[in-house]
Amino acid sequence: MTPNRLVPIALLVVACIALADTALNTQWPGRPLVALAFVLAVPGYAVVGHLRLDPFVAVVAIAIALSIAIGTIVAQLMLWLNLWNPAAAQVVVGVPAIVLLGMQLAAQCRRVGGGVATISLER
Image (cartoon, rainbow, N blue to C red; front, side):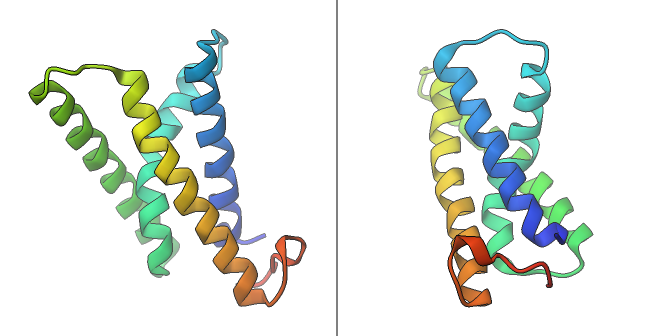
């Protein structure tokens, strides 16, 4: 699989694990790494992945920068509104990101010409 195919799937898994961790308040050694991957990659790639930019390194760089910007904006809004709740912020950012990542996967399947089982291995 090419990175363009694998990254949305991997980030969808990361987002689901991060939201499940938040909902269940689990404690396990990998939680900080999942949270870091979520904050640095998921929201930005959910948006930038729809743009079909090349090269892939540029997509990753823009996705990380956009993720940091989205996190900063959400944190600033929570501070200004005096509503600090990191768990709610993760849900507010994560649910739309999951929807956007799912839309990317659906678009990839449509471009290939079939259902979920026919995700192409070619670019």
